[in-house]
Image 1 (tube, rainbow, N blue to C red):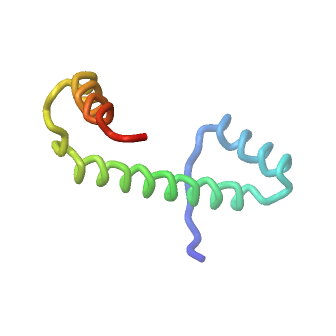
Image 2 (tube, rainbow, N blue to C red; image 1 turned 45 degrees about the vertical axis):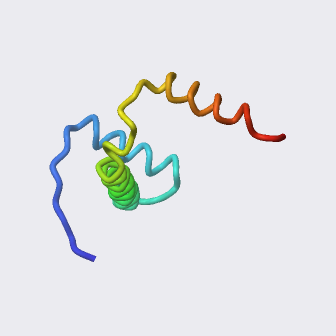
Image 3 (cartoon, rainbow, N blue to C red; image 1 turned 30 degrees about the horizontal axis):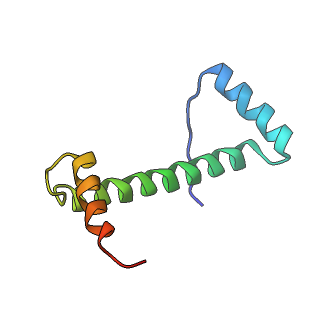
Length: 80
């Protein structure tokens, strides 16, 4: 592991210490877990953004409600 020095406001440091006691781990473990969760969240958000970019513009351009009505009308003629 790499050792890192971080400066925090006093209230954040107090919260970290309290959280560590509450969870039963060291303050540094609380920070490690927080960084891991932030990285995972960022990766998911990035993947979602990529998906949105990939699928942008694939619609017909018509009003969504009108499209639904048109498609459902096509279904009316199908046998059940």
